[in-house]
Amino acid sequence: MKILLAGCGDIAQRVPPKMDSSHEFFGLKRQSTILDNGINPLVGDLNDAAGLDHIFREGFDVVVATLTPDSMTKEGYQKAYVNSSAALALAINNAVYKPKLVVWVSSTSVYGQNLGAWVDEDSPASSTAFSGQALRQAEENILALPCATVVVRFSGIYGPGRTRMLDQVLAGVGCADQPEQWGNRIHSEDCAGVIGHLISQNEQQIPLLELYVATDCEPVTQYELRGWLAEKLGVSLVEHQASARSARRCSNKKLLDSGYNFIFPSYREGYSALIKELTL
Image 1 (cartoon, helix red, strand yellow):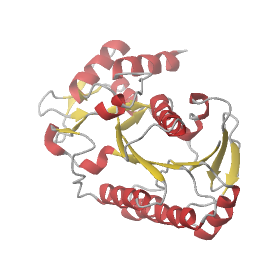
Image 2 (image 1 turned 90 degrees about the horizontal axis):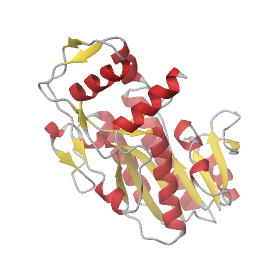
Image 3 (image 1 turned 90 degrees about the vertical axis):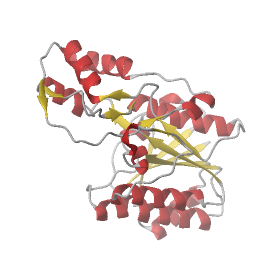
Image 4 (image 1 turned 30 degrees about the vertical axis):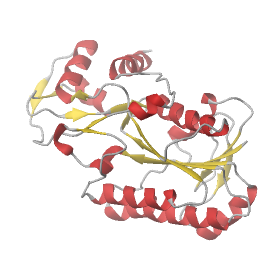
């Protein structure tokens, strides 16, 4: 099976080891580069519809899109998500050989803050921020495709190279226990694992939902997480002013119901592994 990893960054390059060796992977990036895990590099721009038409002559069975904006601005999100999803949809519609599955990676930020409430796949995507609205428009572009499509909304991704929280705790930055600042996380290895799982389910003709929330099994407050990390790292924290807003808590029940088994079920396992890697 030929799998195109469009926007082939860190998460995408972790996917091949999560699947059996019968699959052939191609990584689409704007510049020529060497990719990990035996991925065949392709050069192309997801905003270039004509260029994508040429690339899709290869005849891919699965397309996985994992995109990152060049800037955290309205224009950056428009280009990375809305424009790219529209160009990708046009290329797939034009392709003689259409993929059997398209996996589009989105974010739980489409839900907005929700003041600590639980959200899942049935909750309204009510974000009023430009980022959330761009992500939602991109999702709609993909879900309208004439083939099987799955949108995966990842929560906060951490792992190697994604150590912002660890860095802050090591610098002694703490927070107050009130108001509660809820957070949701998923390790980058589980991000890749979820993508591989969904592709395998589709390959086995197991029905998939069109949307999954991908987050670990235990939302946690900033206060609790920072305190736990500080104890693990042997550092003291100084309380810093925090925003009065509380983020949502995300449920992964439907992902678990699909049969996915987490590599790192909670922040405890994930951050313990990350701390061990950083201290080797």
